[in-house]
Length: 234
Image (cartoon, rainbow, N blue to C red; front, side, top):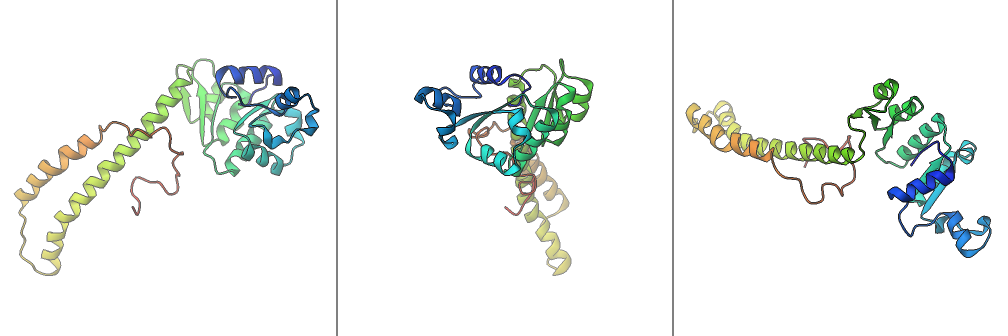
C-alpha cells in the first residue's frame, strides 16, 4: 500500500482492509509488545512493515530491495510522486509484475511505469486516465479481480483452441505435402477435407473458447510476457 497519509492512519487502514493481516506485526508492534526499544528488534522478525516517506528519501536501493524481499506486507506512508515511482521500480527489480492503482495527478508517473496502470474512472483525474493502461469504471477494487480472472480465462481458452487447431491441421496438410513432394496419390479430396474441417475442427475449437476457468486460475503467478505466449515450444 502506497499512500500520502500519515503512517498511523495508513497502518490503521491497511489493517482494516486486510493489507496487513491479523497477527502480523511491524517492528513497532514487536517493540511495544516486548517493551523494548525499536532499535533492538530484528527487522526480519516482522512480517509487516510501515515505511515513512522521509526514510525512503534517503534509502539506498539495496536497502529498499531488502525490505521488499523480506516483508510480505508493506505500507509506504507520506510518499511523494517520485517515491512512488522508486517503489514501482524496486518491485520490478525483484522480478514482479507490478500493478498500480491511482486517481490523482501525483500517481501518473507510477501508473505509467507499472506493468499495469489502473486509474479510477469516476474519481480519477484526466492525467491519470491517460497514463493508465486500464480505467476502472465503477471505482471498485473487486472489479480488478474480476478483470484479471476474465483475462486469464480468455488467454487460457485461446491457447486451448489454437493448440487443438494446430494438431488437427497438421495431419490434413501432410497428405498434400506427400502428394506434391513424393508424387504419392492424394488420399483426401476437397469434399473430404471440408467435411473434416466442419465436423472435427469448427465445433470443438469454438467450444474450447467457452471452457470454464481452472480451479487454480487466480493462484498462479502473473504470466511472463517473454516466455508464456499463445504458441510456444510446448
